[in-house]
Amino acid sequence: MSIEVSGVSKLYGTQKALNNISFKVGKPEIVGFLGPNGAGKSTMMKILTTYINASEGHIKVNTFDVDQDQKNVQKSVGYLPENNPLYLDMYVKEYLAFNAQVYKVSKERIQEVIELTGLTIESHKKIEQLSKGYRQRVGLACALLHNPEVLILDEPTTGLDPNQLVDIRHLIKSIGQTKTVFLSTHIMQEVEAMCDRVIIINKGEIVADKKLQELRDNKEQTVIVEFDYRVEEAFLKNLPKVKSVINTHGFVYEITFETSEDMRSHVFDFTHDNQLKILQLNQKNASLESLFRELTSN
Ligand code: ADP
Ligand code: MG
Image (cartoon, rainbow, N blue to C red; front, side, top):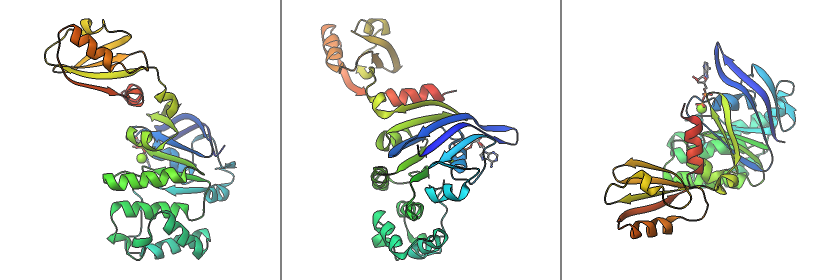
């Protein structure tokens, strides 16, 4: 196992930011650490990278204990902190060379990470001249310098525009083919786009730990349908395999079915047989979204 967390709690004064957390991450694996703001994501990541200590519990990273073997943990981990702090008045190459010294890595490796993170065309610029997307690449390049087994990325895509987002996601996915990637986010689409598994944290506690494939295989689906007139919810419950019907707004209804079979044609036939008109009909893969909402709404 690349990351083993067992019974970890963290107190800031009297506030419990983490409460008895346990999980494991293997290799290669990309795990999304998903939770609302203030859930404890950054705190957990700072503990994994030895920046702060846990108040209770045991943690191993790449088999090394974070309390007893900090040096080896640091060698094993590449860390992109929240808000990606960089020295803006340094040049990209200069900044990477500066960090390379800390890690004692070769000049060749600097060039390698520049290429790996797609920084080549911007590598002669000052960091302050770079767009947010390229600054994120510099942060990633820095985290990759010493070729660590485990990457810990704290909200790596926050603040990126849609094109930058696609590029960085792609990069992270490709890194995750051979390494362990543990990334935090408060956006569930991020998890859908990049991760093999999701660990959901809320108020310092883990509330779910699931493979994305499991969620996709979920035997439930929701169809969103808009009629041209009000329909009784009870009437829509006559549809086959209905679990619930919610009138979300206006004449729009969310109908959840207990089946993975596409139920849109059934909805269409049903409304046609009952002389109703459909204005829109969509299927949504609601499993991760509803899980997240259900588990983090209080
Ligand atoms: P997340 O990254 O999920 O947004 P954090 O780990 O940053 O959450 O914070 C978890 C909780 O711990 C929050 O309530 C936050 O205010 C608190 N917290 C974080 N860092 C400190 C600190 N250095 N001192 C006191 N409280 C802190
Ligand atoms: Mg955070």
